[in-house]
Image (tube, rainbow, N blue to C red; front, side, top):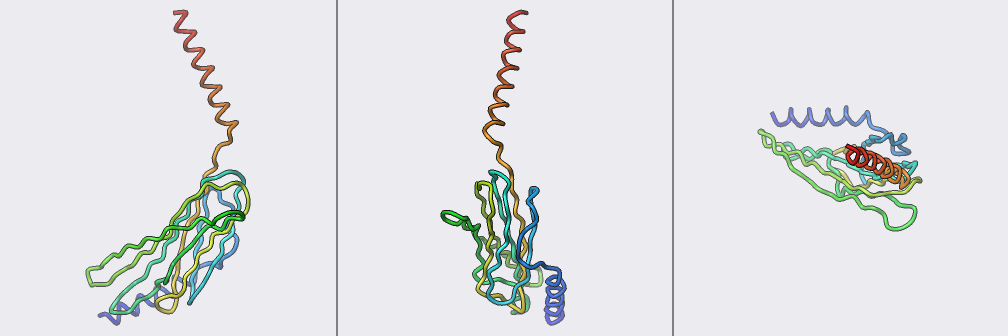
Length: 176
């Protein structure tokens, strides 16, 4: 039974890994972009992205390791990442892990990298790295979301509009 489960898990990881992309520039963030890759051994992938204006950027990356019958498949050792800033300190992604145990004793170790930052317009890079893997290959996938921050002029116009409405309401109350 366990040999059959291990074989199925190995075949599934091979089929899934064939659809992954090669690191490089991400499509324009409108407002998000997804990325993924299958890796072998030590790696450092760089995903480029560009922001048209001041934005809040959030990143989430996941790797799943399957432990079945004493064998580990698909895990990334020393899984890490950061947003590479052109000037100043890079923005590190925080690491967390969770283990899910199946009824047959199998385990899935879910590794997550997450982080966010307020970034000005311009080009940036997201770097994902690991020092090794468990099994023949490992895969990760993620999403990056950019939410534009309105410019100061937008807030001034909104405040002016609300002030005019307030004055009109006060004037109408005073008449009646």
